[in-house]
Amino acid sequence: MKIEKFAAIDIGSNAVRILIANVIHQNGYATYQKNALVRVPIRLGEDAFVLNKISPYNIRRLVKAMKAFDLLMQVHEVKKFAAYATSALRSVSNRNDTIEQVLNETGIQIQIISGKKEAEVISRTSFSNFINPEKIYLYVDVGGGSTEISVYKNGMISDSKSFKVGTVRLINHLVEKDLWDKMKTWIITHTRKYKKLDILGTGGNINKLHKLANLPESKPISYLKLYSFYQELNALSYAQRIIQYRLNPDRSDVIIPAMQIYMNVLKWSKAKAIYVPKTGLSDGMIKELILSESTNSFQL
Image (tube, rainbow, N blue to C red; front, side, top):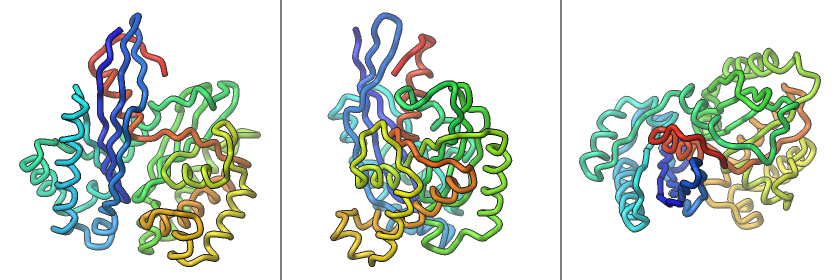
């Protein structure tokens, strides 16, 4: 048996995070276990979607976060890592300058991935505890800048699409009705032929809601429960949500539009519940790193 450490840096629209994982090689297989997860509340999406550029202030914060992540990886003796940026950096006018400054000051090369690539990487995550190969699922990952949606059929992804409908965009009133309509049309077109399906939901907001619901990991959140949460939280002020539900300041505002997205997906797909695997882009990145250096099969 050999154990190595890999790391995935996810530079999103609402936060920047690093996942460090133990990769265990044994008998021709590689499995991984989460070792450490650090999340930094840098809201690049607010710059990107309003100003069309990352501000000098947030570039400095991003550089500091990358320096901290580099030190953390050195302490953990990480062998291999990747740093992916999604919707926020993808759309700004100074993305090349931002990436170059981070590289020059930290040595970390950021890769900007497309919405399609993001959906593909997320689809690498394992849902073995949730998936029944005989059922149809709609996989929905809600981020600050975009929402990735995939149809999961026969245990595999059959179709996927990225939409610029994200929580940070929504709180800044940057999502037009036609974008909602496009998402609605895509979901109805790709799900209407199935009599029944469930939702697999990932992202920090649905994870938090599942925790607040005090449900076992294997139990889904029903539409009625989600709607009840929406009514409760939406009736409170930003400050009241932080105090009464112990939400982080950068979670207290975006959790409302996240619930709107999930409720719409449930309604349009006619699904009745959301399973919450608590996995996402960083998990898919770890699996991609494993595959990139080994032709051996692996299991989770």
